[in-house]
Image (tube, rainbow, N blue to C red; front, side, top):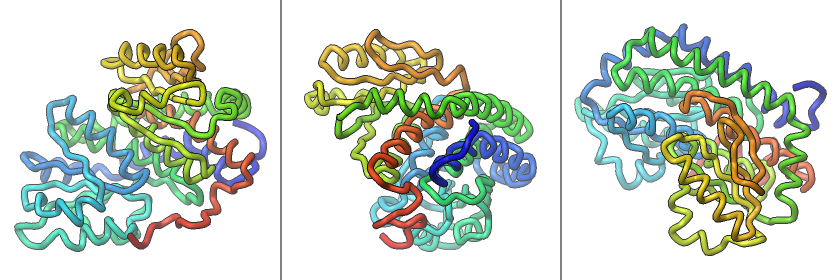
Length: 355
């Protein structure tokens, strides 16, 4: 991707391929931490938590662990700290993802998890280790995303890489194998992300033309794709102040389908092979109802009338690092049109220090 960018946000988007590779390189330096994780994980209840984009990224390890036969729960930190904390005990392994390690919900959760034999083991995944969460946990993993001023882009892809290796270890894989696998997945994802970003201007214009004058957007996905759709919806709201909703694709049929019509813009991330046929059938049905439909697939296939984007064939654990890019680009263009600087929040803050 070449040329200057009108905002820090777009510069951070362009930095994602390098952030992916940086996170993978960091795994080799954290082999001891991953080995420690492998020692304490067996037979423990696995619970993943976070808030915002750090929660969205948890869809990937929870899905991949379930597919490998290892049960894992996913509960956002606010629900966990106020309503479900008693489910955590000395036989639990709590994986807490946070870009800053200082968010109000996660710091309170870790502080109130108990002590002694009743305390769960805590694994932190943060950007850097000089934060409250990393210092309080039993195993601290660094995404090495670096400085990030705007909405989660670098931290999102960095967490995906670290969590991909973590999931291999939690499913019983050897640490060297986990690092080698994650490094390979990351290299392929970084290459595809770079190729997509080289066409950023043309792609963002194509996406903007597709959206037209529609005033809201729905993003649908299944399995690991939900990391990208949830993160994408957050980006539209935070960066462009544009209404967007993310739903599990099957849930869309349970009520929201009735809203479909010419005013609808719906993006379907159809990257999971098990449900590809279902996603394509839904896309065709939505097109027949008059909706504008975007379909994101590894090979760029989609029903006639849909706008399609190809991600390339990648491991599902790193696919969200590429599938989220079209949403980032469209959000950035919308922000510019609407007069917003994505990195300048008016009501929220980069680190959410209060509930």
